[in-house]
Image 1 (cartoon, rainbow, N blue to C red):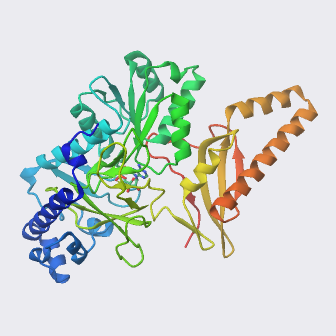
Image 2: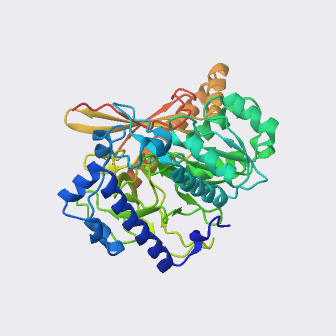
Length: 447
Ligand code: DLL
């Protein structure tokens, strides 16, 4: 069930809201922020030039570099007295990107997250274990605001503490989870070792996101926990989690809260706006934000838009699952490769786990890909038992199984992605686990 009436209004009503929001935002940043005024003047555009939604094309893009150059607060439009909350991105190198919210921004964020939670079937009967990290990362607090708004009871456990996560699921009778998908897989793995059958717990649903993941990973989580899982997308710069969300009914594409965040898809090379259905870089303009509104922010995330009707009744445009960031995209011998393409193949094979790292190396002038994948515990136990028994035939059979697994994976990846890869099958638990976003790429190329 939709949470707000704006989720089901018709296209012309939505466009009227969007145009009003866009005009207000452009005037607001022009009047209140010197950097934006300069940028718009340099571009030769005035707020009064925005007469239709199409005129958004007149506006310059904003990039991550603009936010870095103006770190921490130079792109804020609200005064310090108006800002009530700060967050920052988790950038691994250099300074993070700072974001600030006014009271109105927190309200919009909370409503976006309430729509997300309601979209995934959360309500006042639910006990939500919020595994997204609390702190500067927007995941924990964003999910907390939304789950509370739909009336659920929130357990603010944050990330990490795997055994305690499992204990609370059992003791508190958790019904709903919010987490990165990779950490849920880790929780399941630890629980299995403790002899926990997650399907016998009260768990029913989850909202997962914050990192690229595949449809096969969703199927795997649904199957392992016996729950239904909806995707959630967002980025700190725009609002945090809740920019878009999947509905329980279709689980196929994410409805964008487009009355708050106006989406475009552009060709990442030329900046040209692409039509509905075309794949390209997602760009958002916040049209209802006061702390740090962003005009045509280039997300680097690759997706496409669909205006087709959805059986859930929402009319909000849908974006396709984000397969990866354009800066996560590896170009190997001229071929574009996303780790999530590889993930969906790995997950279809038996005997290997969803724990993998894609290693990029340069040998001479050639880039090559090596994928480290853990074999499953069951497979390892059988092989170890055969070695202990000393039965040569069984041991040889295990070696043949490993060999075939490698060959089949190599074949499937070559078919799907178009390049040859090396496969390293490694023992269970040998790849480091993350408590938040998983690190899937190890790029060892220099220069
Ligand atoms: O990850 C906000 C968030 C928290 C989203 C909790 C969903 C749930 P950042 O740390 O700024 O914010 O990272 C944003 O993460 O540009 C995408 O590249 C990636 N990302 C987020 N959600 C998804 C998703 C949060 N569902 C960056 N699928 C974004 C794929 C995602 N990638």
